[in-house]
Length: 348
Image 1 (cartoon, rainbow, N blue to C red):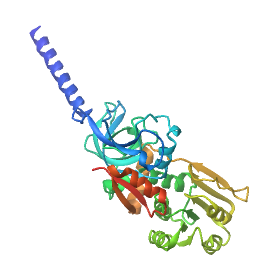
Image 2: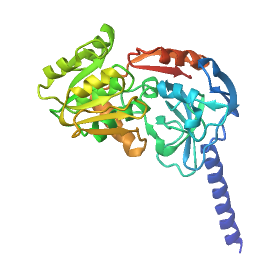
Image 3: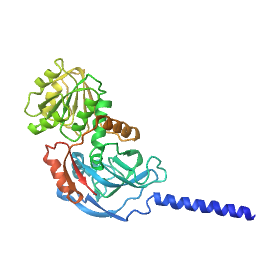
Image 4: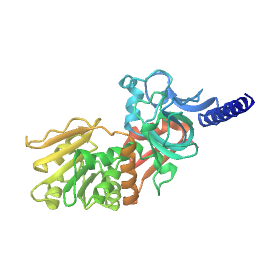
């Protein structure tokens, strides 16, 4: 009996120790409150104000990330004015769909991450609010390890844009070496990455941008040819690259200039564009395939993105950085347009 009691006591002690360690991993040391840029109503950039909010706790399948850098993009502006577009839209609503930082806590079912890991994440309609905050809790399946060669600042700029770019090249258009492609809107946050991934795949790229600075920018990223999408002769530039018509168009901007890109498509070509590009492109040739897509996060998706980032030695152009307290100014800059690369919020 004595031996059984001692053994039982040891088992209980070990279980208690494991429970304490698990509790620490779950975030027992997290602060109670955090600073976050959130909205209490719809409106202009001025409705984004600094709030003090509770630090989210992870569910069993979630991680809490101490955010270093968050991306700022046109879809954040859209959610500021149309929060009803997402399910988890209660006020105060913390904006932001992506960012990078360090894992601060993990749920009990999370196996791929541990406290201290450097990670980046894209989570549209995140249950606990967005990334304009010191901490965010995110489903672990929407998180990836920061790839080699990127800083946290750079990783914070590429989760949404990188997934959108690589999935447009690989999944929507299925481009291969020797194909010809127009990237319309190649100087923006997504286009500047898609250009580099297309070149990684051996694709010949005609990049559209606006202004001399935009043309110089995309040429420096590796475009084979460039043309001003607003003022230049897109069709002539495309014919110089592919006399019989280009194989595909990847559109990150809409309008009349996109229609001119579509005119340069060969019979049976492909057009891909992410949700949010308006109006929808309409090819004249009814043999053309039109693919609308959304970026999809997931463990395999982040692994593929990481391989592409590392193989391409990706350049992550960041035009401007704002502190968390100036999230309103960051969105004003996005709304002003003509951004060469990405706008970010520096949280830490």
